[in-house]
Length: 304
Image 1 (cartoon, rainbow, N blue to C red):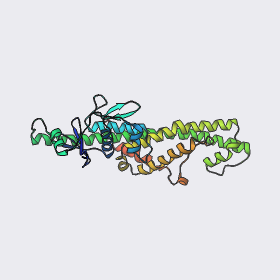
Image 2: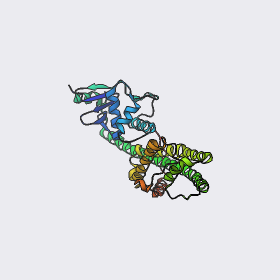
Image 3: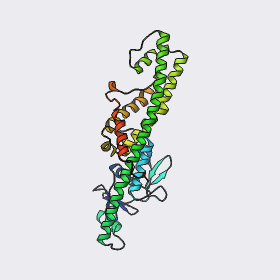
Image 4: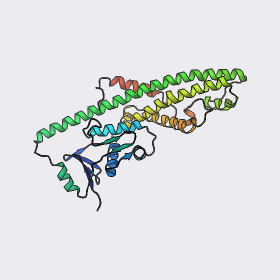
């Protein structure tokens, strides 16, 4: 007999309609939150490792553990919880997550009845007011989360730009030294130029190249990863910031190039992704983010 749903705590997951209920009320969930719950419930009482969750929830996207942690936190908030303590979703640090006490139900009608009947009848007026208050709170909470995410994106953009400027200074210094010593003039794009002369660099020039790689590693890569994680965790940003889609595409290509080419090729002094790659950095996105933050600066801080 097919499983029609699962009960866990005060909740019932209807597999046929792919909906979550609490006390006969539908719980609104983001698609990724619903998928997370489904994966954990079907594996109950066993743990689902982080890699499996990454591969299933983001099958074609490279995301960090932060994205998964953010999704778990948002899902707990949607369930009315504030943290891991006594939470329905259990955390095993460094391993994964689980919902230990899910019970399979073969009769969804009876399951909904048994788990959704209130112990006493509340008046229709009170229910209406409670629903309105909940909707208002959810809207405010979501707006605060989006503001928090965009504000953090701005911070990581600033950090990445600072690293880029420092790297550009060393880049120009290295070009000048190579041109002077080899009596040549750079005519190629920087990546191609450094790759062309890699075998002719002296010790001092190779040292500068390694310094430039450090800026790509610690300064640009980590901040680009963080920006992309915020975009993946809050798709609403794509509506708020018109150029956010182009920014995400640029970052995905940059990160892919870094992880699949730059790390393995020690002769590369830096990583650039631009017009020649078909995904140039949308420079106007910086001003769009600043304008959005200035117009929403009275929003309350985010709380989990």
